[in-house]
Length: 194
Length: 194
DNA sequence: CTCCCAGGCTAATGAGCGTTAGCCGACCGT
DNA sequence: ACGGTCGGCTAACGCTCATTAGCCTGGGAG
Image (cartoon, rainbow over all chains, first blue to last red; front, side, top):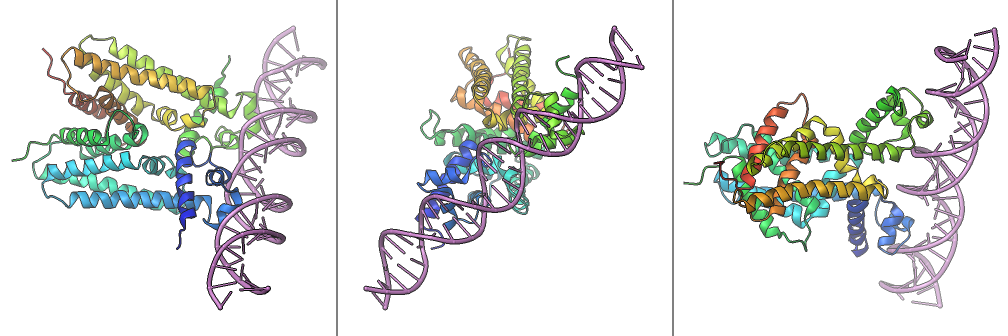
């Protein structure tokens, strides 16, 4: 009940517009017009423009983190963990490219304390990858010059996907996920299992 | 004479602010205050806020393309070309991280026809990498599932550098350039030279 | 010494935006 | 039938900005 169909449509429209024009360049009137309503009417459903952004970014970060934890829990082999974490990361950025795009590009537009909260979630997510790589190194499965650099590389690859991926493009989600999983393993110099 | 010291300082201040807060969130008064002047006084030196962004982005794209061409011209071995192109790409994004950051994040804020012009330059740059990879594949030096995917991967890695690189961080420009050059070669499955 | 003007300033203009206030019609349960 | 509330609308407020107009000053050229 907290969110009717209308509320959901508004969030979806805001997501589209924030992705295309950016948060600052999107007006409440724009969002309203996308759902067939005048700007002020939106306030019958949402608290504020900033609130819309907060919801979008928060739920994106939560989804991503949850997906990561689920993926990593399916095996205890370090290389396989990294592969699944990377595939999950990439798949999320392909499947929810608008959410992921806004989540990284519009962090700036968040007002405190929401910005700090989002940065903390992001830091936590990054730490998951870094720790995973460090653990793999300690276990003798990976060999890297810098775990930090390796994790940045893998994360950046995925975030790039949110920029260029198109559902109807020549590159499928399947292909990116597989290819990037392989690349991640090469980045950390994984030796083949067993 | 077209640009005095003051003009240069203004461009530098605008670059800093656009990087930190974004174009839309930066006011002329902010820029003025960064150079010790009131907002309106800036118009004695620059044509408009949009003009500042256009100059920044245009010269960034030109520099990047020029650097790429120079790097690629130093050898005709495909693998070595890709390595040098990647190192140049990465070094540029590390050394001029603010310019590169604004160049990718604020494309949206450009007004036509500047946006189209910048997109064309960007497309040209991307094509350089894609063509380089395709040529390497044709020459039997590389093996990739998709040249487009491989080029996106390499380009995204570099662009990520502009986000997290810090001159005083634990990872040096030298280290990123070398590491990413190696990764690029692995991404395209380069066989060792000779 | 005088004049000019580069380069600053303040004030004003005009537009856009988020948000609030207050009104109204339609539907719904009783 | 009827009262209420849900969800729309318009008008208005208050604020922020980019940009323009017009003034003033200090220093250098003649």
